[in-house]
Image (cartoon, rainbow, N blue to C red; front, side, top):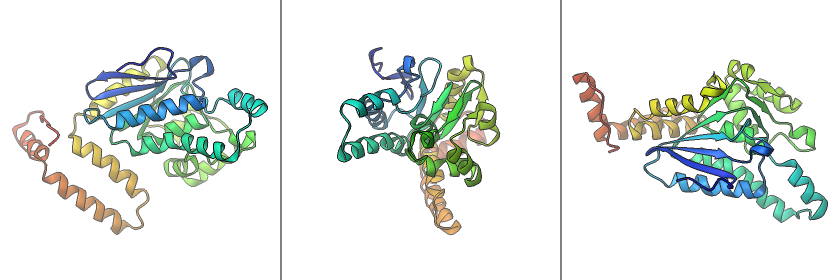
Length: 271
């Protein structure tokens, strides 16, 4: 499906099983207003419920991925109709809810980070399962410069797990930018892509992933995220064992072993 061009969030079906979600306020570097956040949360919920969709590509329109919260909109609101505690908490939870929804989606989520990626936009990218970045990408959480903490939309949880606590602490406490080359070097992104090829490479990566069985991809994602917080090695292995046993009972596993023996591509049915 395709939303109207005026929408803050565009959803496009690239194939029966791949959907692109595009932040669409290019004049503001796709900065997030409250309305845009509500649109994105609704779009993510709708996609998560679509059983036929197996991969989601998240990107931004124009020359940037997402500049984070629309500070100008927040300033205008603070000057004219400042929110009370209850309203502020509600919208804080809606901002964090974007990340929670991405993490909870059964689909594989690939962030195709084009240009500036700041604040809550950086949190969106961190929540994805895989990040590809254009060479013009630039990551930034400058909340500490705005009188806020760098603990934004799950970032204080996700960034240390992706790049290690020492690097994450220095980046978040200084509020300094991380360019594309550094992002690749420290493991923040899987790889760099020329700007013109970013979306094509993201779609190619999605198609490569989807050559594997639906059960395998869905539950590998779940295993990795859950075992990052496993209380022990034994608990992690226990979960792996349970999931592997379930996978071995699927028709797709039988098809995969037969295809390997017959030296032919497997034809997965999702059963």
